[in-house]
Length: 309
Image (cartoon, rainbow, N blue to C red; front, side):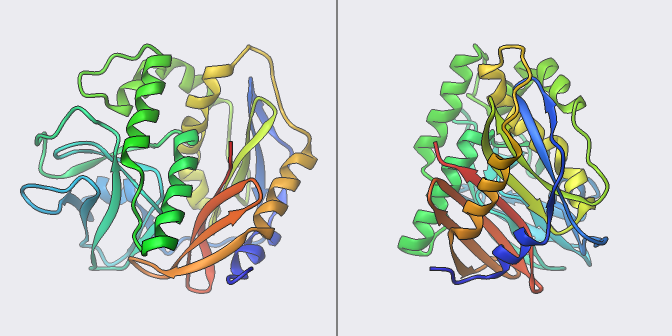
């Protein structure tokens, strides 16, 4: 049952562009109409400009929560999967959150560095990367389950540690603390080649992403400017999965597969919950798909949809 029509409206407002392909990774651009400038900053730029702080919630700290303080006069958007490094251990954000000017929020997070629980710094810094796509899809589904069951936005922490450890083993990535960042660093040159192959097109607000000729997910923002800033992080998160199965040949699904995936998200049940910051958290559950969105100001600010394995 649909309880939130803005998701369908957002997906119907975009056009599918010709795919960009590098080896086994393909992105179909999602092109919007008109130009909308974002009325928020992204997490990475806010932290770099010292307009916000992320810290442990206390001296002792708690693995599933961090304290976020927006000291600026602008809203700040945290995108689900964003990684933060420092403090007692590296974490990723569990879902997208829009924090109003001057606001403080306790944000739900998950650990991606199992072997450390000791301060390296008091404040977190932006890692400029996200949880890799397969794990992000599973985490999105888990956050939806806990929201439905208990109203909480928690992950299955053991499952995330398991996914990170499996990826590290596959890539033979050494890490003293089991940090996801070390996996990304171990494949830096390959990831750079993937990233260099993709560009944001005019008015592009998102993309349908495919690996090995099969659609894996969709990302959509309310602004082309936001997507352009996020594109490199998006490509990295999918490329880390694509490297596993790359056989050196270009692979891209037919356009119909991308359109079918968009339709499956339109048909998915969409249930809104009051957001931790501004707007509403919307969780998507459907046939072969899962996802989440943040809606505020009468529009979908960010939407991430994932194909279930």
